[in-house]
Length: 343
Ligand code: HEM
Image (cartoon, rainbow, N blue to C red; front, side, top):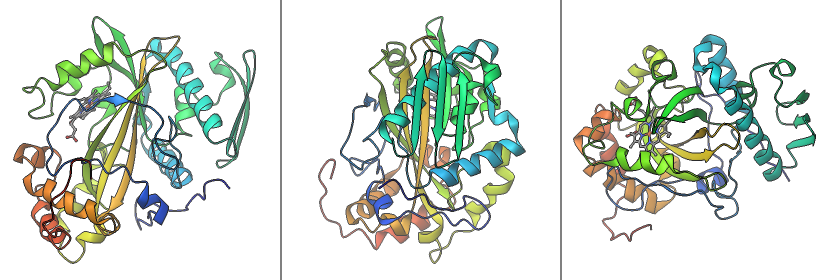
């Protein structure tokens, strides 16, 4: 049986929920009771069946609704998708990676047939059946990056490698934690990471960049990042801050369990074969506190992480207005038990 896709919204009436299975497979990001930035990069190898790491590109129950939300963001703001002229080849590389991965991992939902440069792509959940010539932009309704990422959960940045640096020269960014592709386009690794506190002084970005520059084709890597979002809103962009910024003032002890979400990004890194670019998929997973505490060790741990989070990170992640309320709410779920690393 294939995935049961949910019909839900990430705006207005916010009907997004996780099923029981969705809760159990949530990528809880903390392996100890406190948190600080580190170069937490590991090989992107296959994880347990059913986990978000089972396949290189994860498709889940939110797929169809997330794609509808992306289409709406792009309709209102086409600048969420940009590709500088020299990045078209990387776009084809990405199209190949995603089509191959999705059709191999989920054959009941996606099919790719290749006959030389004549390709046939079937996406059943979205009702798409297209034939095109690989490498010929005129045979697709959008550029290759936009075409395939309108059909793939998560944001994507395409990074050109030159002069010992990575350059954000293309991307589609509609589910981001308060940063802007339109602002960052053309920037390099150190420039777009400029606003992040503490990590520069710790040497995190210097080491991470070295790691990235040496990324090899066929050996993708991954890391988890996290923040918190009020309501299950995917598009928390600076462009739309006027729509969601005020939500942060609405949390109380009575509603925080339902409204506040842990937002985890599964970030992966793939070297692309023809262009030598890197693709950086940023896949966002949301879980409300009430769902999260159904796994007792998660509730206990999140309480401790939030309680001890360095003030610079509280501020940067935008938690200042509600961190104390969240800690108080979560304290009911922390029995003070010793926890083990990873557990
Ligand atoms: C934050 C992009 C790789 C660590 C960010 C931000 C962007 C970004 C746009 C938000 C900055 C802002 O506030 O405007 C990327 C891209 C990468 C990449 C495109 C692909 C190469 C990495 C790697 C690390 C890393 C390899 C490893 C340590 C971080 C951290 C933050 C951050 C710690 C702060 C996140 C938070 O506290 O929520 N990144 N990044 N990034 N990035 Fe990266």
